[in-house]
Length: 295
Image 1 (cartoon, rainbow, N blue to C red):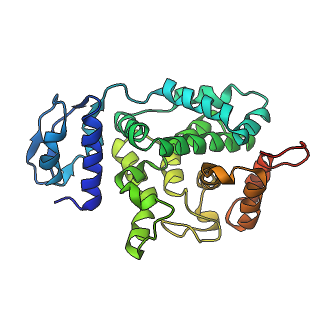
Image 2 (cartoon, rainbow, N blue to C red):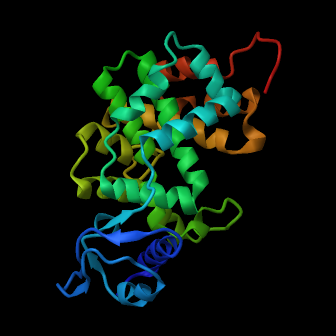
Image 3 (cartoon, rainbow, N blue to C red):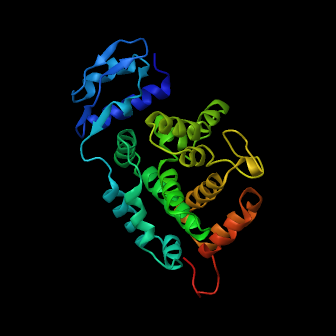
């Protein structure tokens, strides 16, 4: 039997399937070996009860293909629009000697079928989550470029930024409402999402260790105050350090009233002990003074 979040995820998948064609690319089985849906079947709401009664193996996203799914061109288009609209991202691109690298690298991200399905689910049902992920990928790319990361590592950083919150799609979206008072159990559940994201990517068997480690470490902090493992200092690798800083900045930029330079500068300086000092210095471009205006 599904737990409540498995049921929530199944319902989200079925709701997507009722709007756009979602076809089974392979048979869907229960963990006990019962075949629930044959390959080549278009899902709709009539399949919800059948799927919701069972734990599934493999997970749904590995068994499905979606029409008009998110692709490289979609991601590049959204990224370009965000850069045009957001002053903070404009400052990043303007400080690069070659802006084209900010977008051309997206073509090299490996979009496996399970990831395409989940990104499409995010686009259709959690569009702000997809934008947040693209924002994290852009900031991670910028930091990677500035620290001299290789092309291979830049692709890994962009991939990790894009995929880091896939696990949130498996958790009831209402728990992410900033106005909701969470129970201790709900707070623990939310803090599992980095590990869920990593598990999704492990199941896809298509991503290098740099991506996997960055994804699971994106909420860790150098002072040990982060989650899910409370890692600190050298336990957090360079990819994790980049992604954790990029995620913190992107989360601040997600909030419309906090997009001004002063708020961002205050947040980063107040929490400087949680992040890599060199990377923090690099990101001062976001709130550098002397241009005579603020956002």
